[in-house]
Image 1 (cartoon, helix red, strand yellow):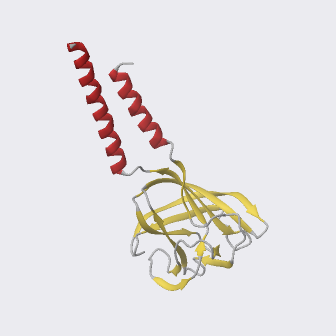
Image 2 (spheres, rainbow, N blue to C red; image 1 turned 180 degrees about the vertical axis):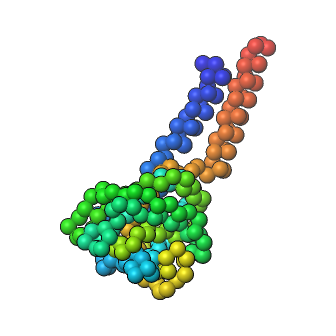
Image 3 (cartoon, rainbow, N blue to C red; image 1 turned 60 degrees about the vertical axis):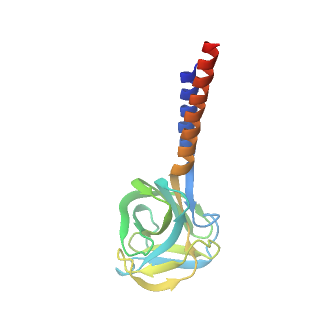
Length: 208
């Protein structure tokens, strides 16, 4: 095997490893199909209130889709279209907002539906954020066992706290995890070192 072929194979392996991280990048509760613990909170009822939920990413992610739990027997079951909003860690500014068509993935006996939608251009660095799934008169049930943040009711699209609520809403982000710079820099450094070592050995063999 030539040196060029070996290094090319290592580079291809690195690219393949990066692409293999597609899947769930964050989930607020262990099981989205579980029965809710708390009655649904209303999104934009009478033009007020927007439940938002805190989440933290340990590594960056390119989010391409979401799933969340909506109350299927509420005024709005989340099907049709939903606005996904991502706030900064202080919920003082909206970093991302996109209204997308939605559909139901599945339903459960507890009058809930798992609603899904696809988004584009959502790139998140490691850190803490707040998320809102907003549609007029939509019910979002709550769960006590998420343990990932405090649910807060706000005035829509402002991040202004009206009152706090214990628990979490149920949701999931899917997409691609973004590799941390340090490990990939070390990998490239190692590939470069291997290439230099092989070149030195080749020169030594030719000289002999």
